Length: 140
Image 1 (tube, rainbow, N blue to C red):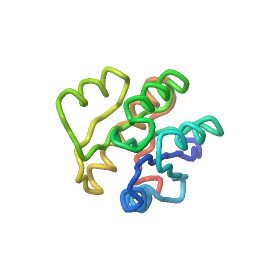
Image 2 (tube, one colour; image 1 turned 180 degrees about the vertical axis):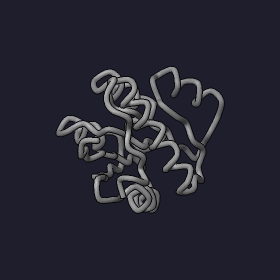
Image 3 (cartoon, rainbow, N blue to C red; image 1 turned 135 degrees about the vertical axis):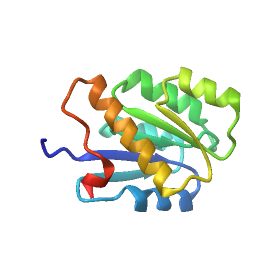
Image 4 (cartoon, helix red, strand yellow; image 1 turned 90 degrees about the vertical axis):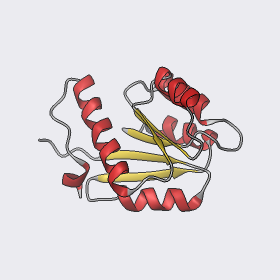
């Protein structure tokens, strides 16, 4: 397997959430960046797209669903995991229809975050017909 650095972007208006997910995903072959709102997230995506984006739905300014749609339109190879404190069937359906890989309700534990990101990486590798995806655990 080639040495691939996995790039994660965590988009949430709560600093404590960004810090927690950063701790969970940080590792030797992982680059983790954060954004406090949708505009910042899209600016960072334009600089250099991320492999996996963990995205909150309710944020000031641009809502997460708009950010999701823009990411999937402009960077279709990036996988997006929606993580929200306001889980509802309507927003789950809308997120999946807009291209989200997964939809998780807060609070989420480290195992759920690692499981979802591993699945997203595997899906990305399969979709791009590349080598088997590394597990997040193997990147640490």
